Image 1: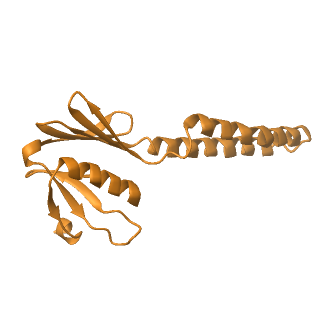
Image 2: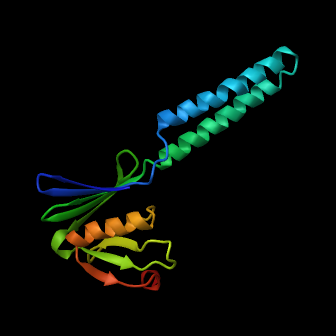
Length: 167
């Protein structure tokens, strides 16, 4: 998902992965699966087959851990702030873990065309000293939307294939 906000002359572009469900919806799913699973486990435990109960608990614990891990991974985002002087790219989950600052007059956008028609182009913001990829987790339509937003703000200085990045 790509969104654009304008605050006091600053443009803020936020790119984040699609979230199919919220953490609260995941907890409701876990509760809906826990009731029959633990109910059956308790029933079998009362009949003497007690090993089923810990296995049902282990199964639900693994499912809860997987749901949490996926939800945490989907909180990752790129925040691109554009002012008249500076372009800032922040990457992280809930707070920025990495941040890049580019001088606006020297910054540009690198576009690497897609290899297949279902992929989007690879986008990088760079200046003379450093470079960082943006929106690499987006689908094709969202990548093209991000490209459109960045094209309005930054000039495209490099439009090359992927082999130029590896050299």
